[in-house]
Length: 349
Image (tube, rainbow, N blue to C red; front, side, top):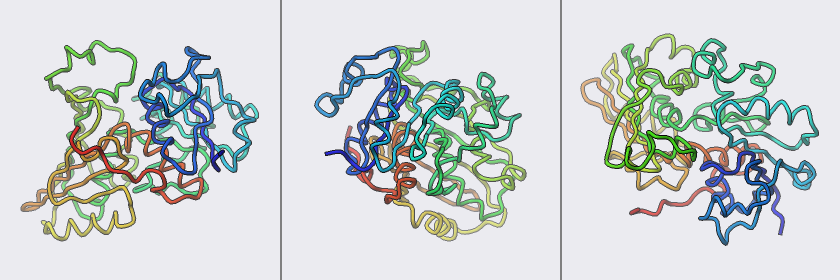
């Protein structure tokens, strides 16, 4: 039986698309009604996403069918394409017969930064396109509060999600100027296309930093935390690759000018996330195995003599991408944020 809401995916062969399809197969109200990939037209999606055998019988199509989207109460198109393709795709959709009841969620970073200079510095290959950009809102529900009226959403970056959620509650305290973000991520965040640095012999049992003080998620974090925060603080953002496929662990370091107690700081986190179904505040450092395959972000905060350390763990393909997109869909479709997403990890993996 057809569900109330439909979703079409453009760029359907990547990891983000595969995870979106998997998660929506568990959703009681939203279904995937089309998956497009020009390089795989006509092939069953299970030729690429073999884990979906028996779950989905869809085949790749060249482009979404607007008539199919109109059959639903509301619908959405998820852009799961590599960086650089979102702007022309959105322009084409807006110039065509996109239904008024159809929203767009972009999983790439092409439309995240609102400052043109910062965008041109970190996304030089992507046109700024203000006429498209101003339509999109930044969709991190726990911090920027995705409005139900939003129609076009730019999904946050995976590392940015963990860093923003670690630092947002600290905005209520006076901090020393420098804030440090130490981010560790699995290799699936680099996408499906083979890269020498992600080749198994290169990554297995290895550990390295990359894009030190030059990662495009750094300005995204500062933007989401607000102009006041970015003016008062400088950030040292250092990402690392760890030898795992999925999962991210972010450790944020800051110094409390007024030396507030651990109890006071933890109360700020509890207050900030009390209505957030996907934030789990833990007494001990979080673990990747507890969040992989889910939309949860587990957070632990520790304070000593004014030093504060916040640790967050999330799945880069879940809360860092597909799960967060579905959470945003729930909001704009008028559903509870946790609808179809509140399930546990596998535990030991």
